[in-house]
Image 1 (tube, rainbow over the protein chains, first blue to last red):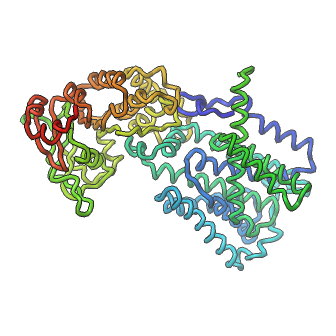
Image 2 (tube, rainbow over the protein chains, first blue to last red; image 1 turned 180 degrees about the vertical axis):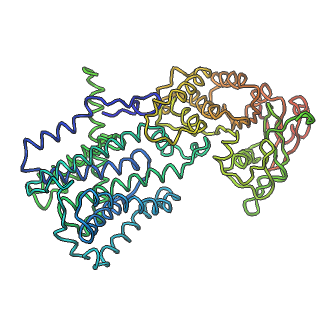
Length: 325
Length: 254
């Protein structure tokens, strides 16, 4: 769907019609399945989270299992801010973004000095630390109980969060659209090509005079910011934040979803969460105990036979049957 | 400037490198003149690549100094040396394998032009970068492969991309680490042609095992043995040198 050729100095950043598909689908979901809007909002949030991971993992080649730290921090920041200061959602989202972004900058400055396994271990360590702080600092975070009934005011003082999740869905969708445009702009920019360079060969990047560490740190900070925004959205739309936003499972599941959809394609971050969460919702109803088995089998098939994830499969199919361009 | 007899592009003074008890660079005094065509040869393990890695800043020397265009760069990071005109190629292809050939070259050019960190406009809007990369590929005869991914290219062409990336940095000093390594002899001819046509004002230091290539290309040769400079001279002097024959050519190379 997003072939590598469209990125880079000879590429084209022009929007292709197919790239509007997710937004058309979102409008259809809004009108055709009104009962599923709360789930829809959750999917949109996870898409944003996956998109943030794709920037550093797919494009930057920074393999992390600790991205939930920034998601969770954003979620708690939004929650605590709403409880203690004001329930204005946009201000809360800004606080979530800045908190997670600064934490991403600070932690990234340390961990990006390492590579590979060491880096992976450090990302796990950071999640553990944040988790324990959230667990023990009960005065602020509510500890194991979390923060309930987080007060959230209407968006811009106009749009109340209704019980059917209509406002929440649109709110999340708008935030996702802005973030998507940001990520899309970045990966097409010289910075994006440079980030790909650090992924492909950091020895050569040094040899062409590139500030490799700085590039990676900037990408990491942007990614952490977006993850924090996704976390903030979750708190605001559910009016609850608990320790589950910081669990290892969340980082692991996120990685599974991104690989499922296809890394380094932007839209893999859209497809993966949709398939994963819908499959989860469907399979969990069929078989509450064994639904993860279905996800596991799907992932094995994808990793074995479609390295580019589900979107990679689509590309392969289009290459085999070249009817339409 | 007028008073100088020759301009020295790159110089090392008493350069040493030890790993514990093992000395891989022993008091190397080396001068590369502006516009030079200079070869560094020596048997395997002589310390040639170590020497290059110290020049480029991948490896810090134990003692000694490196001077580029009159400026001491011994303590500078790699990127800072590149900005001052020191380019290199690698013995083993060190490319952006999954990126287009054009982007491989454009990355360095964008870095040199100071636009590589720009976030907002698409890379394709930076025409100057693309045009320069394209012109460079054309001059090396690989423009037709501009949009291919490097990983899909035959090895010989990948070696040319290796050189193209370095040239995109517009270096004043270019270090070529075995540019023809692993290339079949038919294709190595093409690489030699490319080397012959490199701008005359670039000072080039080439490390190479292929003696035909060395003697055709270089105007000066330095022989490195066990981390020490054994002898330096013109190709004629080197090929007539008895010691060189003993330690190097006598091994049956070339």
